[in-house]
Length: 302
Length: 287
Ligand SMILES: [Fe+2]
Ligand SMILES: [Fe+2]
Image (cartoon, rainbow over all chains, first blue to last red; front, side, top):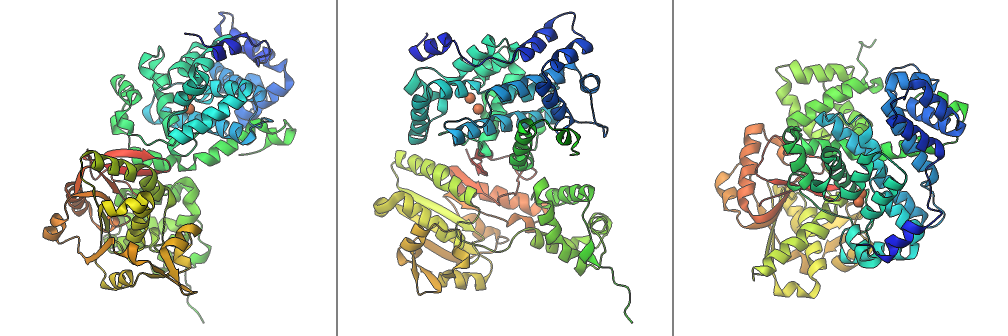
């Protein structure tokens, strides 16, 4: 079921690539010989990346104890290998597709705001429901709509058309994308996640976050599906996605319920009020990833 | 010369106390203060500290929690945590949710049923800002088709004084500060300092005295497509709240919406409604 846009994207030679170190770290995490030393050595090969990862590890988003973590080795000891790999992945993707694009800057910003909000909300829900996604929920949220950015990058004019269409007709972006481009951000995102050799759950979340019932990684995909809606309810939306919805009627909600997560005891009103401040968290996250890696920032107390 | 007076002016609310007070208020009123609203809560409660001659927020919290006399304080507390001022197009996300999502949906349903009637209720309408805002929104949506429709907006309050000013339908600049200029031009007649609602809008609104404790009369308010009952429930105790909300449920048509205050919650009060997330606002739907 390929179409010209999808074909073109598949054959673009200069599609953004994940920094080689990030690829290496992800590959390393799958190898049986993975060790703290190997991972930290690998990240140190890319000093700006290492600085960013450390800064993130010391930010209010990750830091647990009161002591500053000054080496990657210590960071891995404290936070676990998986969390460092999550941070490396997030920081790397944000560095190759930064929130400040040259063209369509406001849209690109709105796009990342939506994605970061989705990741942060996913993390709050994960916490509330005791899902123990171990930080994967944030990366998955951050990258769930990555297809949109690729479509915008390579088919900017058409993507703007789809964006306008979704507002005019008051339909979701994926319907507008199908109408104008003949493909969706889910397909493109899935393709990219595979091409970048990202963990399987990220590819899965990309493809199925609007129909989690078909996902292989059902719980995290359902979690992202709900977080995506809530991000939109907090007006971190994109195009005609000004939806109204009943959370307890959502496919994703039923999936989580069936899997035994205590969604029925969640005080949804209160949770909705709690994430009222998500905008501030989003801004804080963006400034943590985008500031240049100076010493002061690494030492900044938050 | 002067006796020692605890000075509340310098009291600081610690994050821990903020959380305790926030949870207490939510539990007792359904109103939630998110983390960024700490200073707002601080400002609102400082007067309660002074009134009770307390030196800090901790003591105030312990009084609320453990003092048997505290029940009396609750009402003043709720008064100070809700902004009592009213204004046109107040709480824009809620108004927008009604305008963009709920109202078009309700009208479509009605049209499909072949009856072009619309019944709205502003329960606790105060000086009329809310029902007139609703009327303007309906008019804006229907434009000249309004005459094909049978629209009635009931607006009730327990204060005769408030009802008198609602009847006068005359407002000052400040009350209209959230009103878009083109709306102001269309639906208000100005004499320079005061703005009066046009007759066309006034005719859609029916003002009446109503005491929510008057079960018999409340029960008669039937067949509504949407009810706005914002920042009213906090003054009821749990039992009364449950009874009143289930009455409001019965007052709605199937498919109808109930809107309560912007950060008010029915979580512990009713499970009958479906909670609807609108962009930036919550609503309750009867299915
Ligand atoms: Fe999406
Ligand atoms: Fe999304």
